Length: 217
Image 1: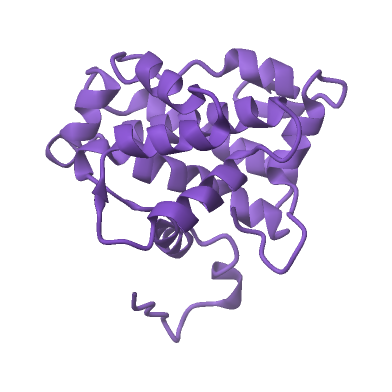
Image 2: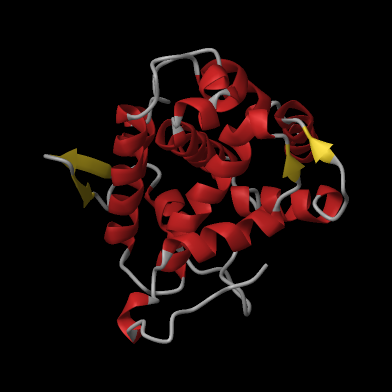
């Protein structure tokens, strides 16, 4: 990968820059076939928004706002077809926002579902497993195969069940219930954090910087 940086760019333009983070994160996933862009692009989009907060470039509230705004763009995008079809035809229909952000919403649901179980389970840990087992080969994966691998790691069909539930549907993944549990109140399009929520600890953990030299998944 070549990273071309303008010599005229101001220092303040770099923190939180989106495209470079997004493209580098793709190197941490297996090659997933283009028809399943909801998985490869969606999960990477989720982490593209999380990492700037973990690195301290913005507050937790601003990080959740960035995700909320992205989900809003995803709801407005697309052609009204089921997510699986939108993903297959993304380059023809230009339904990028719908595909990327629907996948990111499923990543959030998976992350919360894993963290709800306690212990060390999280989407971070799942992505590290996928990197170790599957990302350093030339194999092109289907989403189905990658999700089966993640289910086996998790010891439950969490990933496959999320995909089975939402891929056939034209609606954007439902997030209101998980927002309430996390303590995210959306008022006139703005996120307000409620610290007394049942899953407040899960919410804080999602944006917390992991121990060690890297804040990545």
